[in-house]
Length: 110
Length: 117
Image 1 (cartoon, rainbow over the protein chains, first blue to last red):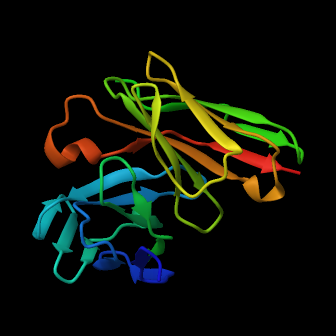
Image 2: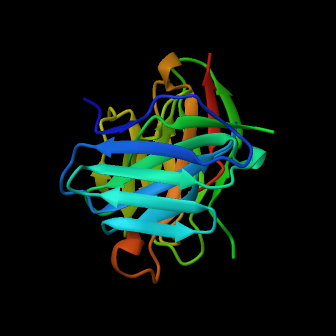
């Protein structure tokens, strides 16, 4: 079992729809959770961080964390073609080292 | 505010050669981590440097080594290159005045694309 698993893609949604990206992790002592967006040929860009159970909203993005279920998700509302990218889930159990999933590729169709 | 910078952008080497990649952290950051990202996979942690010392290391052979300088910049060295070392090498920095768990937020540089022939 991989330490961080993401729902296998690719994921395709129409423009304006809600995209839902999911991630599970195995290390129960994990404290910090991140979502990165990576465009093709580019480096990962941090878009959301979440540290406590519940929802965290930032513009069209909402991160959800459930530590009991070892589950973190990212919702993108009103999806735009510019949101088409690979989304990486990252988990920190201790300071510094991030463990990444293999990403979910999202395509938003106009 | 200068972000994380890396050099070179691209590099082509042959098997058995050695390579050095360079990274300057985001202004105000003092901790640098290196990651290897193969095509279609997530970044894999190589090691982390803080106060000029290697603090954590991932599951990489000792052909991979690094260094951090007093100005917090860092180098990644890979010896005896193998075809399988072809990947995007990413540097990430964190630290500075961020408090609490926000201290763990890492910001990536543009990466160095290494091709081993």
